[in-house]
Amino acid sequence: MAGTWGEAGRTKFFWRLWGSYASIILLVTLVLSLLINQFFTREAERTLQAKLGTIADLAAAMVSSNPKELWTGQLQLRLSEVCGNTRTTADIILASGEFMLQTNRGRKLVESALQSTEFLAAGSKGSGESRYKIDGGEVYVYSVRPVIIQSEKIGYVRIGSSTEEVIARTRSLKGRVGIGAFAISALSLFLGLPLARSATRPLKTIETACRRISEGDLSLRLDLDRRDEFGEVARSVNHMAESIESQIAQQERQSKRLELLLRLLNDSVVAIDRAGSIVFMNAAAESLLAVREEDARGSNYRDTFHIGSLLGWIDEARESGDQRLGEVQWGDGKGKRFASVYIAPLRRDDHDIVGALIVVRDVTEGRRFEELRRDFSSNVSHELKTPVAAITTLLDALEEGADSDADLRKKFLSRLRIQNERLQRLIEELLAISKLESANSYLECATVDLREIVRSVRTTFETFATLPGVNFSVFEGSEPIEVSCDARLIEIAINSLVENAFKFTSKGGSVTVDLKTDAEFAFFEVRDTGVGIARESLDRIFERFYRVESSRSRQQGGSGLGLSIVKHVAEAHGGEITVESEFEKGSVFRLRIPKDSRVSV
Image: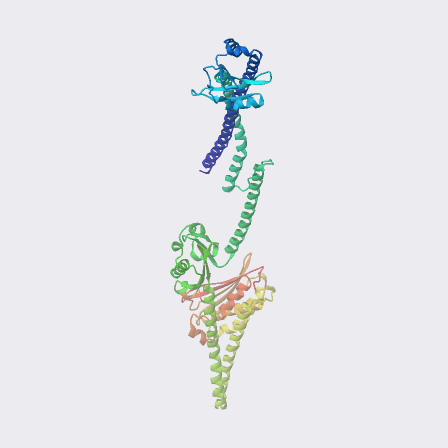
């Protein structure tokens, strides 16, 4: 469509330019033709006038030389011979006003003829001329001379002639002039076509370049090496294209930087246009809304956002044109999520709203952390309260006289020691988990043969295993398994797993520790034939203070921090802890750490 319009515009301008040129040529030719015709007509009349003056001089001389012929017919005959033209007239009038000779052609003399301009000029200057149009439309020119005899002016001779004959002679000349003018005009118009094309060719080039630039071809440059106005326009167009290209490149760089920044944000960012269609969505938004940007782009936000309260916020912001800041939540149970929302209308320079920017920050983890913090504080308070209350009660009993009974005192002191150890273990576990979670903590790593850790665990629990009547087995392998790790923490983790296995394994059961290895990892497996773990508890057993059987665990002095510490130790060494369990049949815990342990603490 643009090309058609440009071609039509160029053609229209070409014919307008050529038409103006043609009009000027025709007008000039017409004016010159008229001027030339008038010149030839005036020159013919002037020549005729000069001829009549010569005849008038001759006639005046004839009369002056032989005045007697005025009263005879001989003068008229002689004048007819001198005039030699039937259209030439001769009139003689005496100074007294008497007509001595008068023809019937031309302008008739009257009694007041001596007062005419030509006679007055002849009387004062010696000659006079005049031009008259008679009733039939024919034009006559006259020449008057005075007749002087012996220095006395006795009358006047007037010689006249019609201009028809000279006009007839100039008509053919005028025709030739017209034909010549037409030929010159036609030639000029024919030569004007290439001139018009040459004049409009730079304009067509500039118009084509401007159209391509407007269509986005900003690399185009005009190559018009001219020093006229077209050259100035071409240089201006090139400068304009360079300026637009530079501005667009700068805007694209800024846009890309902004888009990259938005895409790297952890917050979900979605942009919609005036109609509510999605035009941008970063990776965080794709994850939050569970939809790909390619699929969502162009669709309405109401078809993509499935969070009812968020839709209401967006609708309000679009209708009011004001920013919105708040919090939304959706889902229930474990799938319940929380997010803070910021919605800002997007405006142009004229303040017209062209869309909206939606920023959603998922604060679910923060909320869960707050819940964990509250639970942690509550659990710590509860765990500390139990041994402290027990110690207080036992001390009160001793103060009230229980120390007088040796057996009773021994029993109370034994219980005090148990509660004190329980309190001490709780504090140590809290310090350990605090250290592992601290950003400034570090591991004291050294190359260790893991069999030594297994042997230490066996020494610790061999005596303990005989008390509840549980079979305890340890398999360490025959080859050294050397790993760079914090041996103290690894031993704490294995001790915690074995202790839990003994707690939940009944008399007659078994607890097994098995050290294994492959090309990349070393494995500690702790198996038991205890009560097992219910399926619904498997996802939470590594949480702090979580107990599968709270009453049994507390009776045996458990704090609920052991498995949480094991998980932190494994992750600190770049490993992991997994569990397999079947209710009422037993459990298997596997602590895996890489041989080239990459410390994460």
